Image 1 (cartoon, rainbow, N blue to C red):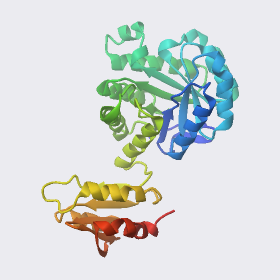
Image 2: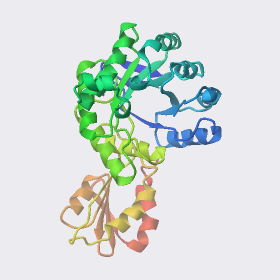
Image 3: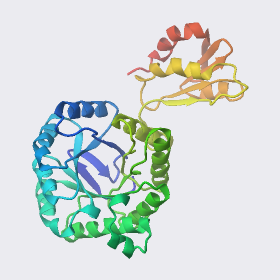
Image 4: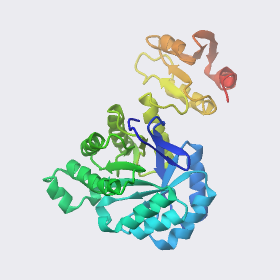
Length: 349
């Protein structure tokens, strides 16, 4: 979003003037080849642009090679502890690897850097709060955000000292304030380099969505972040959907329909929740960015409905439909499911 440099991974550009990318991570073991490939296909369908795949052991190298050769989704190998696994991932065809500075010996990275240079591989430095070393904490005087920055800086400087610049930087924590401040420090120190953002271990359900969204939104509003992942205890497709909803809410990038609906109150003249349930299944094929308003009373309803491309203003017995500000008639609830497909039909792709 705000970096000066741009990297390319199998044609996927990150940083510079590229769109903010939406990522996820495969949540099945690489040796379950059919499950991995099926998950990749589902991720592609919902707009995922890159997924990390954990390579915890050399025995999975052939499985990684098979996956990279079978999917259109850009795969980044996720490497911890053993630099030799990073080299195996590159040999398997991965054009991007993530390494964690907190759990990998710096003095064993020279071969990884050399292989990445020769293979045209992008390296993401991915520090997280759970792997910050005691020496980094001591150097930061116990400040965990500062320690995360130090972890990233140590490895970034090693890569840069060897003239390796195809780098993405990231630092994640399970604390929103800590994660935001760590990324602010990194962005200030390394403004040239693309940054991956997100909150690690956000958790399940609404709590995880809120925490991840709070962190990512705070950073994007500061101009920090070129690619993101909403890390949820959930299926990876939901991570992608939430990621796009964050970008849409911040008016950074649009995927899908912009659905505006009132929260309802005692003034409502229609069952808005019922209306939304009728409307939502009909929106999937509309072009990205089309606005649809579903409103429930006369205070905001008619004007909001008229301002949207498609407006639906609830009435006690059904709804009045508007298209580009012009009334298309009033219909009963029993008529809407038959009328709405034609109402939306002119915009379907």
